[in-house]
Image (cartoon, rainbow, N blue to C red; front, side, top):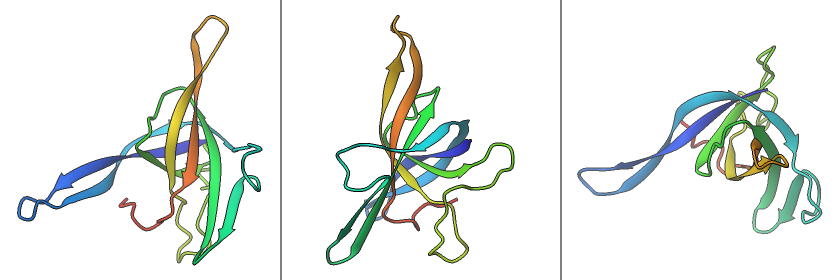
Length: 133
């Protein structure tokens, strides 16, 4: 699969001093994606709760050969051969690609200490409208 990586940029308004953040395209990389499985979550691969608003969290595990870091956003998770986007927001107009926040990467080592891959936990971003493409 292919995924697009977006990095967070910090911009300070020269007139007001207000800090704003935006997302800018960094690179597209090859990766393997799988639902994150853990016994610490209520349901797999989502966790649902009902409070003042309905909250549904989707977890994925991203396996890459490079460390993508923590303050990145992953989107356009697609089939490398066909280009078909796998994760989309069917509830939103136009069914845009789902945005995921990276929650951290861990290296996976072989018995000799060489890094084989990086496993990154992805969590569906609560606000799907703030990625400027």
